[in-house]
Structure formats: structure tokens, C-alpha cells
Image 1 (tube, rainbow, N blue to C red):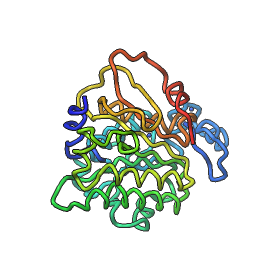
Image 2 (image 1 turned 135 degrees about the horizontal axis):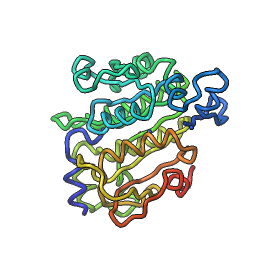
Image 3 (image 1 turned 90 degrees about the horizontal axis):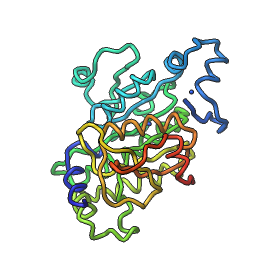
Length: 285
């Protein structure tokens, strides 16, 4: 199983969330309550569309694209952050609820804050480095890039931050230092170490967060049911990118996802559970 994880995570863009959010004073409000205050349409889907947007960083990646599509299908207004806007336009169908903006996490928090804008209520980070000759790229993207994005969120008062990370980021502390997947992934500029440092920054940021650590990513349609465990628990297993996107979106919808690190894989023998129950089963910080 470790070999399976290793192979699936070595693909190019792996490294790349009624709805609930914390307001700036940390009181809990749903889209439904916002709708009632503003006298907007009675249908929940319409209420979602008429409130603030969800910004997705890494929106054209294999996981990020699925997150955008699922957000749109659930009625969210989406701002897709990409490095190449013209190229990204060919990746998505025309949708009045989708706005594509240029955003490069390596260019610093000020430019990212402009891209996020003051109309984004939540941010989902699905960025990831592309393997190349620069051994520092994982740190530029998976560590410093994520830190830049968090700082941009703080500038704009973003209320929720969802990060797509990876199982085994803390493999050394788990006693998995000889796990083939842990060794292999860290050959690319200590990728997992970079991700772990970014996670620590998010947890200190004060923003309401959910860190999602999936197992080996599969492009195939979902099979099995989601297994969700606390941090530093899973060291093998795989999951469809579609399910990862679904969990990321549900992290916006479930109050129980707040201030949590969750690890996910899919297993055929696992019982079907609601996302409310899955998130509630993991202790928060």
C-alpha cells in the first residue's frame, strides 16, 4: 500500500472545502441567517450565490479543478485563482458564478490579497509544485506560497481557510521515516516537510481552518466510502480526487470541521457516514 501511495502522489499536480462560517468576532452564522437579514431569495442555493465568494488557489490543478466544479454545482459563487487566466478559460465551462483571476502564491501576500479581494469569504488552497530542476520549488509553493496565501487572507478578513495537504507530512514523528512513500515524496525538496511547516503556520494564524490530508490521489471515479481520522494516524491508502474535492467543500458546510486536521482515505468496507458525523468524530484544536 505504501508503494501505491508513492506512485499516485508522484503525479504532477497532486501537491496541489445551510453553509457556515465564523465572522470576524468568531460568532457562528449560516448563509441562511445572512439571507434572512438581507431579505434575499428563500432557496438555500440562491442564498449561497448571493453572498460572498469562495476563492480557490490552484484552481486548474487536478484536484483544484474538481473543487471549483463541485462548488459551482453546490451553488457557490467561485473565484478561481490561476497563474494563466487565458489558459484557464479553456478548462472551465462558462458560468456566471465563476470568476477567473490571476493569482501566483509565490508572488507575495499583497498581490494575493488583491486577487482574493474583499468579496471572498473563504479560501481553499489546492496548490502544488510541479517537479523540476529547482529543488527549492516545494518550499516556494507548499510552504512560503501557502504562508503568503494565509497572510493575504488575514489582510482581507477571510473567515475560513481550507488546505489540501497530505497524509505522512509528519511521518518522522509517526515512526514512518522508512515508509517508502515518505522517503520518495521528500526526495523532491523535502516536500512533506514544507507542507508540515505551512500547516503549523495556518494553525497559528487565528483563521478558522480545516486541513485535509488525503492519501494517495486517484483520478478514477470514487469507490468505497470516506474514512476520516485524526492527524498523524493514516500512513497508507488512497482516495479519489473527486472525494477529496467533496470533503473540501463539506469543510465549508459543516460547523464540526472548524479548527481541525483530518486525514482521509476511501475503503470499500467502510460504512457510509454523513460528513457531519465524520468531522464530529475528529477532535479539534
